[in-house]
Image (tube, rainbow, N blue to C red; front, side, top):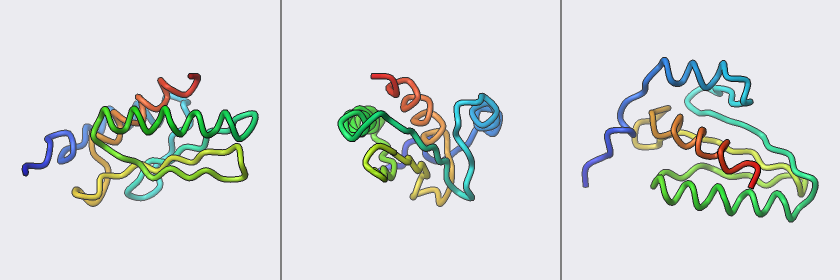
Length: 101
């Protein structure tokens, strides 16, 4: 099975725009990370479920860490490319879109 094109290339301008947007995404080596904080456990879990739906729709799956009962840390990287690709930038934007519910 061929690797989708968005998992083999990285538009550096799109990545720079995401990082400079003030949305809270940071580059951590070969990954994008962002931490989201909610009022409680239920809100954090609901967000995790929305992220899971967005990830399945994109066929690109992040590491999702539920920490301290109300904090969710998302880590995006493209394993097949051993680093960041357009798939990560696109999913970061999709995750921001589902943040509020």
